[in-house]
Structures are given as C-alpha cells and as structure tokens.
Image (cartoon, rainbow, N blue to C red; front, top):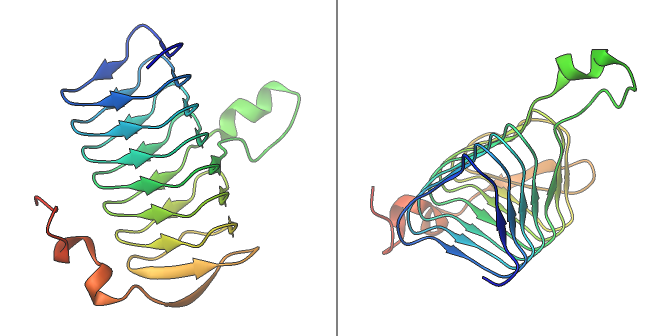
Length: 164
C-alpha cells in the first residue's frame, strides 16, 4: 500500500497484502496469504503465520509470535515491557506476546507482556489481558476473565476456509 514502510531483513511471503501506512520493522517474518491492514505497526523480531488478518491500526510489539489463522481486530495494542524502568534492568524483562493458531482478539483489546493466547481462544473487544488465556476459551473484561468455552462451530478446524 501507499506510504508503507518495510524495513530491511523482513521476509514477506507470497500473496501477502499490506495496506497503506503500515510499518513492518526489521527481522519480521509474515506468512503467506496474510493481510496487514491500514496503519498497522509490526515491531522488530515478530513472526506472523499464514492466513492471518491484522486489521487497521493495531500494534504488534517486538518479539511476538502470531501463529497461523490469527485474527487481530482494529485498535488492538500489545506490549512487551512490564518493567517500565529507566535503567538497563528493563532489557532483561522484554517479552512479546504469543497468539496460538486460530486465536482471535477483539477491537481495542490490550495484551500485556509475555502473555499467551491459547489455540482458538477469543478475547472480547476492550478486554485487558493480564494472564495467559487457555485454549478454546472466551475471555472478557478488565482484567479479562474466562466467561465460557468457544462454541464448537466457531473452532478453526470446523471452518470451510481452514487448510490444516
């Protein structure tokens, strides 16, 4: 897209769409058939699997991994620094997030450093994730809490587009 910046050392696979005003930092890998929306920022050392969709204005922090079929809604923010210090000590605490296969994150959710979103888990819009989320669970709130299982018909393995 127009005014998109892709830094040196990034690997963009075949059939990836990157929309206007996106920024892909160095040493990032993006899998095939992934869509990166308008104004998305992907920091350095991020790995994104195949057939993911990152919608407009989301922020993926450095050292994160998004496995295949992950969906990130507009305005999602991730963080990798839980120390917030001004000394060199903070560099020992950097850790990105991990979203396992088929994980979905709703609009304007916030995922704190080092958290893992389990396979097929769903984060409701506006949630603040302060703990790991187990596979196939729906969480919501601030802080996010488990409210139910993901319905069987919503699981990635039951979708027509899924190529396992």
